[in-house]
Length: 287
Image (cartoon, rainbow, N blue to C red; front, side):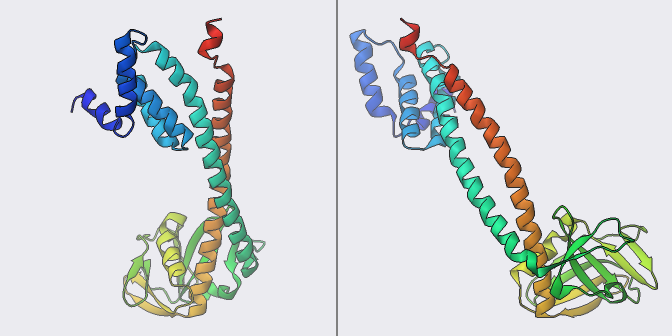
């Protein structure tokens, strides 16, 4: 498709009336502006006034790329663009703040359900749902959902006696999710006191946590896979414990990322406002 065809498509809805006016001006000799270029700018202005900032930016991009020789319109477009970015960024900040507030409320709701665990021998502690906490966990065949100090959810599986397992799965009888395999390496997958422990990374644990959250309050089947397989029943309480830990970690992690995003948006807003302040209207430059 030729560039001209592309711009005819973009101009749909804003071109006919504006183009007619532009053509009349051009014929009278009072305005030599290309009518399609004028329609692009006027369409961008209308989109801006209607708070359709994505369309405004799209039309300004089209104007800049297709009509570089339209100096006056290019200058007007350069003056309009930071205004579009300012309003669009303010809208994003508002949405960001609303989402961050929701996640903070969710984290505050769930935190009382969690227990902080850290013994003198541990380098780092972790949060675990109080209902799912078992101080003798390492001597059982079970899994535990944990949340690190920085808010990352991860799964630890324990099998005693040893099963040679390298992965686990959860099932509700109709659907099933599994972790990736973690081969025995003496670190993430290691042996201790006749049993075995696997610490799955946050990325490897996500499907299990998400499935538990989707089935919170329901009994599930946990299966250990490896040299042999062993199914274990999770009670509704154990599933809820996994779900609460996962939901807490998700809320904390999202709130943290939204805080980072807000800083980026604030920087974008400041750049846009600096550009607005530096922009001199055409009528002032002609004085």
